[in-house]
Structure formats: structure tokens, C-alpha cells
Length: 131
Picture 1 (cartoon, rainbow, N blue to C red):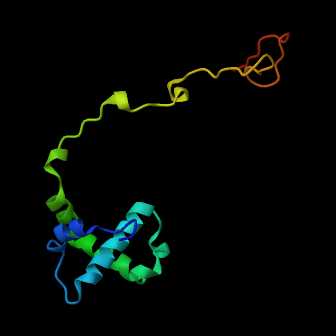
Picture 2: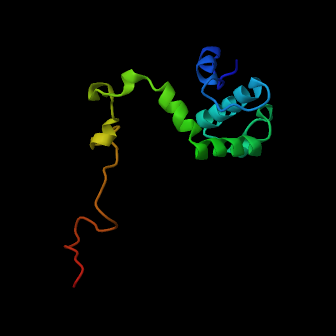
């Protein structure tokens, strides 16, 4: 089994839920593996590896199943009832200090400090834009 392919146990769960069609079930499994590959890698269908067959055939079948509601039926049948409510505890979600507005630390005696806009020096007077 390759990295992005469906396991044997998951295949046995899904197999009976797929639309029936003539031909070997291996083609259905190969198609599901193609869908998983695209979903997991985020690559466009055109970049589908040749081992999955023609990319356009896989995409057309994916599109047909989408329009017929096959994917929605699969997800509903395979949904884990324990995941109806999912709570994320914010104590395990950490943000980088910069995301919280932390000031940058200087890195030595000659560290530069940020200044206000542009080229106005310390001795220049107040600047304004007339209305």
C-alpha cells in the first residue's frame, strides 16, 4: 500500500457503499485512491500520476459521483457519531508572540528602532495636510 492509498480495512467498509457497475472492483479502488491522492496532495487533477489512469477519466467520474450525491452518502454513512460535537481547547492552540502584538526585541547595542514615517527628522516641526 502506498502513502495516499486507502487501507484494506477502510476499503472493506466503503466497498458496499459504492455505486454498482460492471467490471472489477480493483478499478473502483484505484479510482478512490486517485481521489485520495488529489485530496491529500492538493494537486490539480491534471497532475494525477499515470498509475491511476487518465486524469480526465478520474475527474469525470468524480464529477458524476458529486452530482449524483455519492460522496455525500459515503460521508454520511461513514461519519463517526462521536465527532458530532468537537471541542477544541484553546490551551493547546498556541499563537506565535507576533500574532498577539508582541514588540520585537532588540538584538544588541546598535539595534535599529522603528521610526515614524518617512524622512522627518527630530528638529522638524509638526506636519499636517491642509483641508
